[in-house]
Image 1 (cartoon, helix red, strand yellow):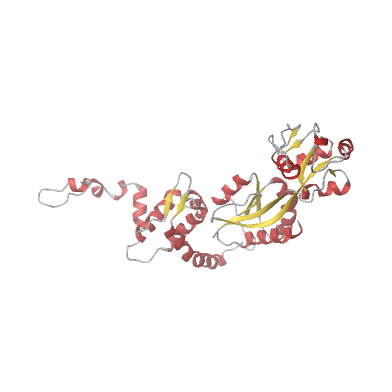
Image 2: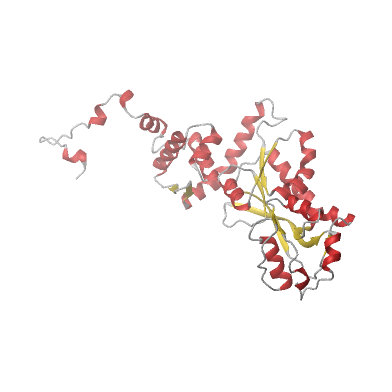
Length: 340
């Protein structure tokens, strides 16, 4: 029996609950807000509620969507609940981190995304300052690829008024940030799974086993079937567990690398500098050491017919709102990548 049923008076009339007798100003603020924004059950859907719903659907997070919309997280929660109440359907499942849309939400987002984006574009036409957009494009990627390839390609966009904010980091962390709406685009050596992130192959990195000219003379010839000459040569690595070097040994020499690195530098540009100065040997993406190879500062120890290759991807959120600066950055990267 519910609480209200237990308060029924002997004459059959239901007693008024304590909540009902409380003045409006004494009720919890969030409850009053939710009631005030909930549209009538048989009325049209409120555009404001749909806009909040779409932001939550795209960000997969109430907190992130609220920040994008400039409202509080409780307000975003109340608006989503109001829309669910009007539709009579659940739109999101609450997760420990963010929310997951139901199939009902996916269908609704597909119906309203285009019209709402078009309406927002029309509404923004009267705003001043749009020639130089006030909101930057947030790009994430590995330090080496961003520094050596992406930033030189994107440099001309500064003169066109595009604002750019770059975050350097590991693929998994950056993809998580893209998923929650922190980034607009991410350069990743890992192809994301699932339908919430869309990826386009950008380039193939070829890995090269290199050393300085001095060490090359000391090591002598190296063959794919015999890494013996490389024993006891100092290794310069990106990480303690030698991820790039181990992959090269496994792919080219068909053996497991178990040596301990002499130098560990968590930036391939630092690895490049150390090896060029004579610290030992390493494996680098060819694009990063092309200049040193051409000048003779670095020497390739091996030229296998099938070198290790790693594909880089340009990743963005599926269904993210279209913004001209983001499109400009995406197209600039895709165009430049043809020559990478």
